[in-house]
Length: 71
Image (tube, rainbow, N blue to C red; front, side):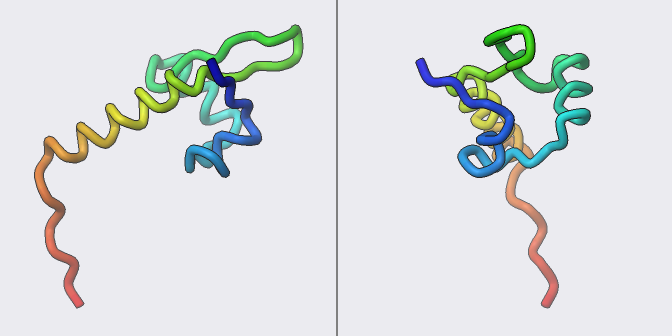
């Protein structure tokens, strides 16, 4: 089981949301809930983040191909 802290969400997973935006998304159920590692540290299970990303990709793929980009 691997944990991903806030600093590594961007470089390792491509998630560059601000801390405040992540808090809002978690509160609305739009992003996985973090684990409390201590009273002042949180981290996410890598499996939860990977599942969230896979769900986003599947939703994108379900919508069909994007419109062609005009040159």
